[in-house]
Every structure is written in C-alpha cells, then in structure tokens.
Image (cartoon, rainbow, N blue to C red):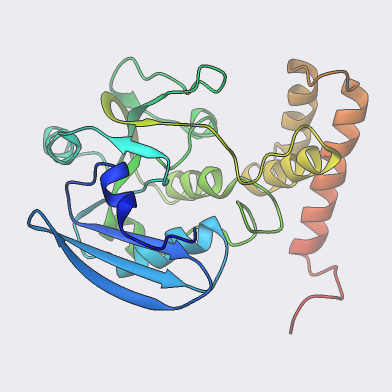
Length: 259
C-alpha cells in the first residue's frame, strides 16, 4: 500500500517477472526492466487484499504464478526452485512452498516433506507461499473472495477460501519443504487482538469454508484454544453469531446492500 517508488523490488529481492499491485490514492501503470525481468507496477485507488490478488491474477500471463505479500524476502534461487519443483511433479496443479518467519512470536508452519494437501490441512496455510498453474485456476473460474481479508467486511480468510475453492474444483495441491522466502511477520493490517469482531469474523469464515461442518468446527475451536481470559462459552457464542450473520448475508437477508 501507498508505495511511492520501486524500492519494494529490492526489499523483496525480486528476480523474476512480477506484477505489483499498489493500493493507493491514484491510478497508474509502469513497466520496469529489472536485470532482464519485466516488472509491471500497477497503482489502483482501491482497497482489499482479495481485490489486489484478483487484479494481479487476471493480468498474469505466465504458466506458473506465485502469490506474495509485501513483507516477504525471496531467496536468490526462488524462481528456479519453483519451476524445478513443478517440473519434478507434473501432477501438481499448485504447490505450497516453505516460508520461514523472522518473528519468533509469529512462527509459520514448517513443511517437512513433499505431500498432498487435503481440505482440512489446507485451512492452516495462507496463499503467500502458493504457486499455481495459472490456466488451472482460470479455467475453473476460481478467484479470491472480496468479502474476506484485509480491507473487506471480514478481517481475514481470503486465502483459506481460495485454497478450499481450488480443492473443491478438483485441483491437486501439494506442499513442498523447499524454502522460497523469509517473511518479517511484524505487523498485521487486520489483527487488532482477540476482540468480539475477531471471533465473529472467524465464525463467518467457518460458515464460508465448511458450510456443513461449521458448527462442529466452531465448537471444537472454542474448546481447543485459549484466548487470554475469555471464556470458551463466550467465544463459541461469538462464533455462532458470525456463522448466523454470514448465512443470513448469503441468503440476501440484509436490506442495506448496494443495488
């Protein structure tokens, strides 16, 4: 957001073709040659993580595309490593690569071996480590939700829903121990603590990602984790509130929507 120069390219160690979506207060497009790689830098007067990912994906032309956040620092060999892994596994439509957190207080899941990812496990991963075969995503009409994620109504979950949609559509998603980047994990644009909204948003995400199992998943999630001094019964009620709100919204139960 609000980039005024191209320093992000060096900060992220970009050494491949790339599309950058800069959310700011103006509109523009620049094409940059960086060591023989083509960088297309778009500036849009809009907000929303899902919107940014969709904007980039619809303009991509490469066979393999990898999603990224702006706090990632890619390895020197990430381009070759990603392409080599897809060449070694032609059965893969998408691969979740290893990314290491530089913040010990916000660790990321470590991938120990190459394996297929099922729907339940996919709930644990974000798309800032995902590379996919572009045509498989486009031809299955898969995109990022504009209802979930930073800048949207619900504070997070666009990555979770994208992966679930990929798996529902029959795409074969795998995970790889090959590390492609570090991530600073310093600040979150959406996390403001374990507020009521945090739990209602999670409830809405459960309803969207697991419509048949959302109540069970909400109950188990409320029992499993500790959130400061909040009672588990209170957390479960907030999850249920989010589930009901999402289901009502999906059915068109709100009268204040734009027409």
